[in-house]
Image 1 (cartoon, helix red, strand yellow):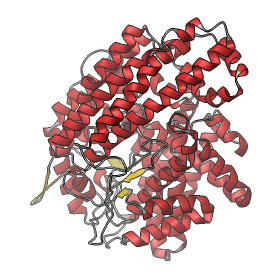
Image 2 (tube, helix red, strand yellow):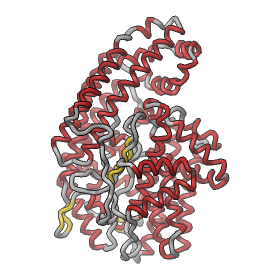
Image 3 (cartoon, rainbow, N blue to C red):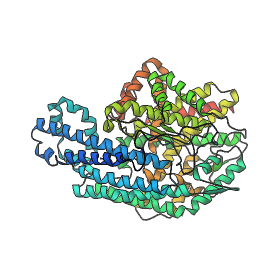
Image 4 (cartoon, rainbow, N blue to C red):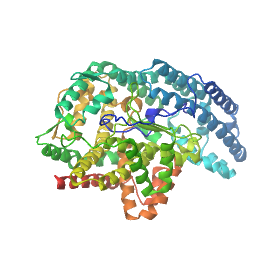
Amino acid sequence: MRAMISLDSQPALSPDDSQAGQPRSDALPIWSLEDLYLGRDDPKIDQDLEAAALANQALVALKGAFIAGRANPQRLALLIQSGMRHYEEATDKLWAVGAYAGLAASTARDDPEWARFEADIRSRSLAISAESLFYTLELNQLEEWEIESALRADPALERWRPWLRRVRLSRPFELSPELERLFVDRAPGIANWTRLFDETLTRLRAQIGEDSLPLPEALNRLSDPDPEQRRLAANGLASALEANGSILALCLNTIALEKQVEDRWRGHAFAAEARHLANDVDPAAIAALEAAVVEAYPRLAHRYYALKAKVMGQETLNHWDRNAPLDQAAPRRYDWDQAKAMVLEAFGDLSPALANGARQVFERPWIDAAPRPGKASGAYSHPVTARHHPYVFMNYMGERRDVLTLAHELGHAVHQTLAAHNGSLLADTPLTLAETASIFGEGLVFDRLLASASAEEKRGLLAGKIEDGLNTVVRQIAFHRFETRFHEARLKGELSPAQIGTLWLEVMGESLGPAVTLNEGYEHYWAYVSHFAHAPFYVYAYAFGDLLVGALMQKRREDPQGFAPLYEALLAAGGTVTYIEALKPFGLDPHDKAFWQQGCARLEGLIDAFEALV
């Protein structure tokens, strides 16, 4: 049982490199977490932890019964039903408390009391959930035919078939109950390395001219229309990352070592295998995805950045020009109400159900969009539990990218809401499908932005869309390849910041191509990618989701009326279907390398359109 939903392991984090623009003076929403708890001292927190412990104790009372009752299908079915009831009740309570701790702490990363509270909640939750480790272990000691006999004996148990199937994926890699407990008990200590990584980045200050800026604002300067500001930002950021490189490298090295120890004990054949299992995805599909994208590097990133360099009057782009606007004119701004209207209209064009779900989130205090000191960077939508509602987190700066980020996170929120009827355990969607609604939401809003743009604006919009696509597909696959090489190298010993930087330059240079100069200092940029610390091998899910959504959007263009109900059904299924089952009604097969090549071709088509304009 997971003690909580880790914010950074959720599929809602934005893959963008920066938050563009500066905050407007418009009133931006700040969430209220009172639907969960009133504060750190709310007695309901202890009450819910106690309720989780009691539900867990009821489950622990069944220890041994599943093995003893395996010969009687009716008896086994009854035991599994009872076990699931207690297990989900404990899960709901633990996830609610854990979500509150993470949500509150993410807006106060400079407050040590919230950091301590979050760590304490994690430890207390893990101590409770560790007692129920036996449950999935006992279920996995049963043979397949015994599980099937129980399912036939009680038709109501069929509801849990998807969950049982996913649990049994880990069967070949499970250890003794004592070792499993040891891994759980060690988890809070290991999590502190991620906490140190986060807190180091939060304290980081980049000296840019006369300004000393935190990480989100420094990254923001890389999108400044003024090339000199971009250069100063890149150099200031590089210096700040270098100064903190030894700490950040130690964090990654330690996290990788801990992962290697667990992988070795469990018998995982390669570093990403555990992530593939968690995502419920076939490694062959990811290999096909990676191969298709790498083969497309020259036609996508290499070609586009050469075109952009030409437009900007340069032989090559400095790395800080990669996401720069095409001219020095101030970018168009969108206030909050404009962004909200675009999201609702775009979602409504596809399905009233999607628009209604998004409208509910906007109308309640469930969004935190206002940038402020101590607030973490990035964006996510947290589902909390199926008994609650999502909370959306972002830093809204008022530019095009922020409008698309809002659409991305609202897509997640609507998906989480539609899937909630399945219950917390079955609503939990693997990353490969969890990015579907978010990226689709971005695409819908982009189409609306493009339709209302002037001829001059279209060039900038296309450039932005292509760059977002390259960041989501090419860059994330490059990140995946960097992680693979880092974890392989870590098997031979600890890597220094310089050695990590060398790997980074090799892999990123391969993906960006000859039209991008990796200037001095870029070797330190691995250090701000928090996914490497929070969720190793998370990043390929972005590329998976982006190319998958491209295929779905093509299906929508072919049959708009028939598409909407199929799409709503896909979202409402949550984690009850595999990605293969989810895509079958659309006639799509992600096992086929050609499927991913088609997705790359769609991005190539945008580059064709951009080239025609320039």
